[in-house]
Picture 1 (cartoon, rainbow, N blue to C red):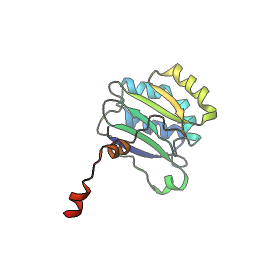
Picture 2: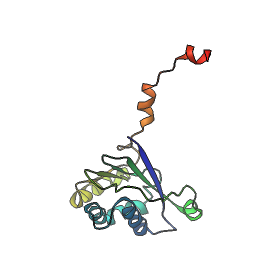
Picture 3: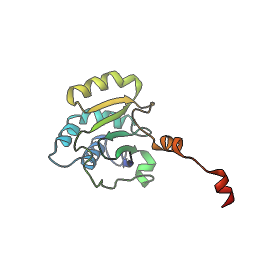
Picture 4: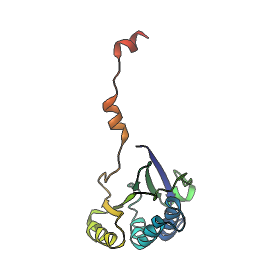
Length: 155
């Protein structure tokens, strides 16, 4: 599975609601059911963005295509654009059988998960300090790599 990451400027460049609106527009097409589900969880997502949960842990969208990770960039980095990557996706990340997990502080996980469940069957919360479905293909790749040392040294 390939992975695409986007880093969206948040506070103070954008309010939490402006950042979530940007993320919603980045991930989904207008008038799509995916857009409707993302809009339905706006208040909850804004709370997480304002709490800087998206700083070190991404929102993760998975479907049949590439995994999309969306981080937020804050304060000076947001102002000067350091590490900001807001390029449009070439596909609708909420098309088909997609799922999304939002990063959340452990102490807020119960209420956030319960609130999300009332609004969407596709969008869940996870502890921002765990991996939460963020896969790293490098580990799987490294387990499959074989190096012919003798051949390498004689070439």
